[in-house]
Length: 126
Image (cartoon, rainbow, N blue to C red; front, side, top):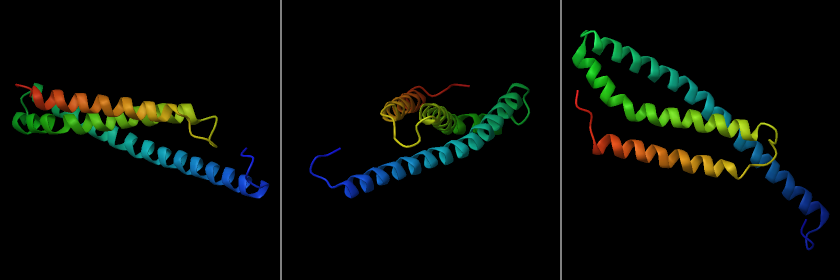
């Protein structure tokens, strides 16, 4: 603890830090739950579009769906994966935020930028 602070101030500051960490954990849980729903929804639609395209049923619509949903699917998949990792790391210590959270977020952002860049730089030819 800091030498210059009084006991009450340090306890209050520590309580604020713990409550902020708890709010961050709850926010990550909410983002995780939302991304799970959208991950499975978009994955189901994408798999359905691939099956329809391969069987020449609504091939034009399926092609449009596959071209439109690839970047959102990558974003949702990375969000789902990153929040799962963060929740596993933060599971034991809900009172403080781990520095690994920023590493996971940074790696996820770099991966998304790489996927989006490759998607737009080299469009698929079907």
